[in-house]
Amino acid sequence: MKEKVRKYFPQDFKIEKWDELKKVLQEMLETEIMSTDNLIGFIDKYGELSDILEEVGAWKQIRMTQFADDPKLAKEQTDFYEFVVAPATPYFFELDKKIFENEFFRELPREKYGHLGKILHNEIEIFREENIPLLVKENELANKYGEICSQLTVEFEGKEKTLDEMSLVLKDKNREKREKAWRLVQNKMLEKKEEFEKLFDDLKALRGQIAKNAGFDNYRDFAHQSSGRFDYTPEDLYKFHNSVETVVLSVLKKINQERKEKLGVETLRPWDMSVDLEGNTLKPFKDTRELLAGSINILKKMDQDFADIIIFMSENKLLDLDNRKGKSPGGYSCSLNETGADFIFMNAIGVQNDVQTLLHESGHALHAFAMDRENISKYKNPPMEVNELASMSMELFILDYLGEFYSDKNDIKKAKKEQFEDVLFAFPAIMVGDAFQHWIYLNPEKNAEERDGEFAKLKDRFATGVDWSGLEKEREIGWLGVLHFFEVPFYYIEYAIAQLGAIALYKHFKENPERAICDYKKFMALGYSKSVPEIYAAAGIKFDFSKEYLREMIDFMVGELEKLDE
Image (cartoon, rainbow, N blue to C red; front, side, top):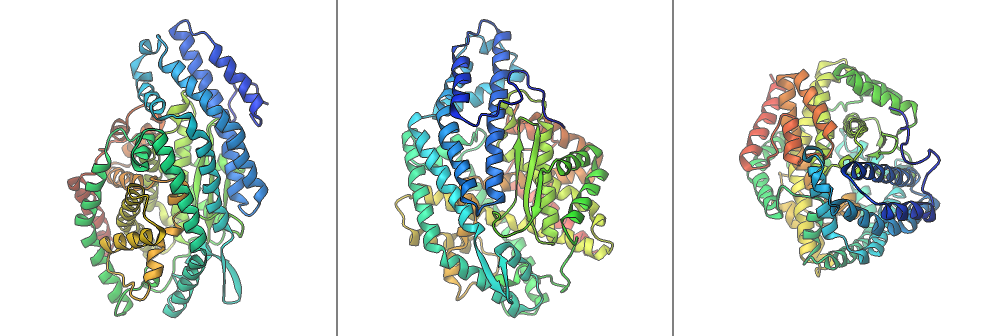
């Protein structure tokens, strides 16, 4: 857990300028590979160079989101992508071909290099040089979304508040106060609707052209292949949507019926969905220092190595946990592949969800550290079905250690119940988001009004008993607050696939904690050196999102919920 000693490049080689990188890339392209040993060394050098480039870009992305209201930082990130990463892309494509087409590549040990061949073949197949300027433009436009969101605040009870802070009010027992807060946020989004819609239309047009250039009929199919979804098809995802509709909705409608009865209201409204039913909102920590200390103690009880990693990150200023104006919304984990570390970004406001968020992102961080010894750079970038398995499993593991934040057993039960219900309610929300994106990119000619209408239809399809009457406009624009649609299209269904895996791993954990943690560490260390099903198998679970498996995992979760009432 320290900066690596570079084998091929000096410590001061930071790749801030294109000419610094171009010379190295040209030299590598001219290198003769005369044996399998030469090829292995070449792959290692390629990996180190890729790691350096990615980490420089990662820090620019981090700084831009930390201070999203600073246009200078946004320009630095955009310029780096446009004037360094983009011109380097054709060179890296040629390097990929140089490796894949080399006569010695087929002689490399299949156990280690077999999956690399599959990754390289896919990337070579979809690459088109004419897409590079379009990808630069897409990156620039996507960054505008966070810039807009970072500046959104509302006036509430005489104070300026960020939209993240307003989510706290939705837990207040005063229903009128909740409604006022909810409507304030929605009105702010409605104010920005035209700007958001125009931004998305521009992104959609660019993505359609990128797909066309690569020989695809639509962006959906391009995104599926470019994401390396080797083990399932878009049609499989439609079946998943149907399975969730059949298996999960009835469970959620029952939960919402109980919520309605406990609140004593005639109908559940959108501002009734976060309020604590007992009227005492969980307050696990006073500030982010307490949040961090409690989280480290939880990880220590699970595995000392886990705690040491987060301590290291804290000591090396690799955590930004506080909510503040001018900061991008949400949370993420960003791998620092050259250092072999990670950076965690979030917006803590003092609620239980912050505990879950920090430990979720800690799961990603543990994954990044686990891959530190991997020398093949493409193995350090697993698909999201794998990345999210690390984070979502951690969210469930920690539930047995919440005594670090709560002395009252009833509070612990409440926190567990909230998390179990959040897991269940995530499934229809993810299906809506995934189905929505399928529809958008298979019907690119549809306008903003038709797009909003389709989102409302999907919300109706996966409805769970919440009354939206009189709130039709708000219902239609609910998708505008989802950054994935703007910044990382089609990165959404992976949450549901990984959530099923996380439930299975939690079931494994409940049955045999030590073995489950061992398997958890084992799958993380694999990176992307194996196929997704093989990685899930290393975790001691199945890669499966069939209706039967979904029902099995949902039944387990319902059983865990029922135990809390015993």
